Every structure is written in structure tokens, then in C-alpha cells.
Image (cartoon, helix red, strand yellow):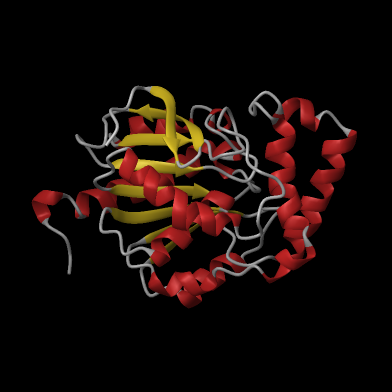
Length: 272
């Protein structure tokens, strides 16, 4: 276990990963571990982690995966199973490294998929719930079309300049994600098999106008999961409800996290 400063770097495998630890540390309270989107980072979450900490009283741990933010760049091209690598190899080591004892995983987009793979492949009794913002369980036509559009925007507009504020090596971040999703073989990517093995409550938050995924993603979770699945559709929000409708998204996640963490507090014991 590593003693966590409010911010810094952790070495996990060959990578140095930047992080923030907000509120109480893992040895003193449950922790919400936040997993960012395919172009996200510690910084791109903005003040949402701080607001979530204030709303729940839990610790909030945020980190940038390799290739993002100020973390070590990733080797390109990324393997098409890069989210499996994160969920099966990197995340277990990271949770151990920070001394994670109990809490929830909160993922957005790619981060939500990584959280689902982890929970469906590890019977980790420390993880008491999943909050998934705009998750992907399969690849849809709308996903590929939007990801192709953003590749053009990256080459022809000021998008690269905007993203460079949040990533030390912006090309590494962008092309690592974009190249994998636009590989023709990625159309076969499907993680729905993991959903049946998740044994904790799941909250899904889906923007009604998500340009990267449809309600089919939610339906798959409802069809495949045996665990409770709570769905919140956020009106007037697209793929970034925590930015586009921050209050509604924060309220839904905080309510879920508080209920799950209180229900599964050590003083009340764990359900069999």
C-alpha cells in the first residue's frame, strides 16, 4: 500500500500514472475510483470529482491511464483489447497499490467499459457497486461514425489544441484511442459476456442525445445482468452528461453511491 498525497504519480508496471486523491484516504473511508473516457484525464474531469466527494463524504480517487494526461505515453498502436488489458492487468494492481478496501468504480465511456470488465472478471468483494456513464458493451454504427468525424476534426480544426491542454502527448492520447476504435477488426469488440458475472448493483447514466451510443447499450445491460441495474436517462445531454447536465448527473451518482456504501458498511455486514 502506498501513502497517498493529494496528488502525484504512482508506478504501476512500466507506467507512471498521475492521480488525485480527494477527501479521506482508502484506509479511513470508502473510495470512489473514477475511470475516465477514451480522451479523458485527471484534469478533464474538472471539478466533478471534488463535487462528488463533497456530496458523498467518500474518498474520490482519480487517475490518468497510460497515454493520457501527464501519465507515461502508451505504445502505439494500442492493441484492440486495450480495455481488457486495463481491466485485467492494470486496474487490479492500481487498487492494491492505493490500499483500496471498499468502494465503487465510476467509469465514463471507455472507463465504464473497463469497470464492467473488471467487475465481471474479478469477484472483488471490495467493489460494492458500479456507476457507468455512457458505457459501451458493443460497437454501434453511431459510435464508429462519430469517432470517424472526430478524427477529421482533430486534423482540420483547433480540437488538437484544445485537447493539448489536458495531455502531455496529445497525439499519443488521440491516436491511441481513435486508431483502435476505427480498426475494422474492432467492430467485433463485445464485452456483454462479462455482464452476467457482475454481482453488485449497477447504475447506468445515459445522455438522451449521446452521439457515441444508443439506448441499445442500456438494453444489453438489462438483458445480461443478474444484478440490480438502475438506469437514469439524462435529458438534454449527449456523451458527457457530467459536463452537459452536471447537477442531474451528480445527484444520481451521489444518491446511488450513498445508498450502496451505507447498505454495505462494515457495521451492517455484507449480504451473502
